[in-house]
Image 1 (tube, rainbow, N blue to C red):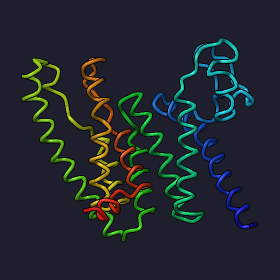
Image 2 (tube, one colour; image 1 turned 120 degrees about the horizontal axis):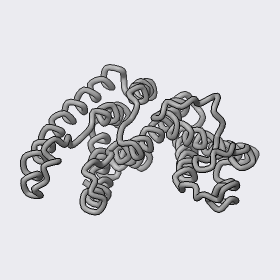
Image 3 (tube, one colour; image 1 turned 90 degrees about the vertical axis):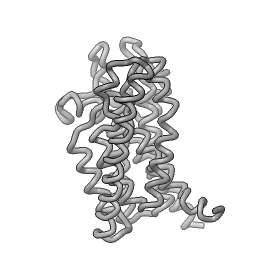
Image 4 (cartoon, rainbow, N blue to C red; image 1 turned 60 degrees about the vertical axis):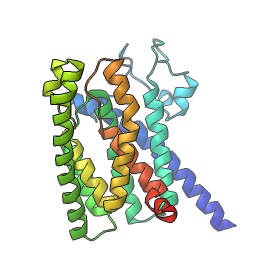
Length: 265
């Protein structure tokens, strides 16, 4: 009974720790692309520039208590702040339930936080800092259950396949789709960005060949509707793909669809 209570306390702590880190990730997502200081500048409202005091900056609760508005000027606060805190807490808890409190958990939770940061930076700016991609690659090598040789082999196989896939899809977009839609801007569009390559490599390292392929397939499915919306409604030909790669990765990692597929097929 005592063990269960201690376990419940650790689960609760992992979630609270996750939402607190999620609050910090919001700062990273906002400031890193703008090269703003992470240490000296205090959190402030982007509209009225009023400093946000700690009691108005409690993860999840402050957003709900303030009804998603700045307490000083009443400007609406983006729901993404709340969502990033919540998803950080859920992923931290899910990793603890899956792995327990050990070395693999530490590296996987760090990797997850970087992936969340990358996803929302890519979603907002459609470009990501190279050093975060390098951190993802290094953390994946440390966190993997494969040998270092197997990990590099999987990474090379996946990135090679990515380059070939990018070539084929880009050829289609520039030479066929551009003519069908009579859109000259498509003639210079790249299907996938260079920033996707380290994420693809990470998926191969952590999930292995089969799991990585499933994750990429899921990412493509997840991206279909947003891509159609961006192209035809928002008239935006660039769709950030890193968020969907990360979503595909987490789906395969936590639900292990590879094992489910093997059972039925």
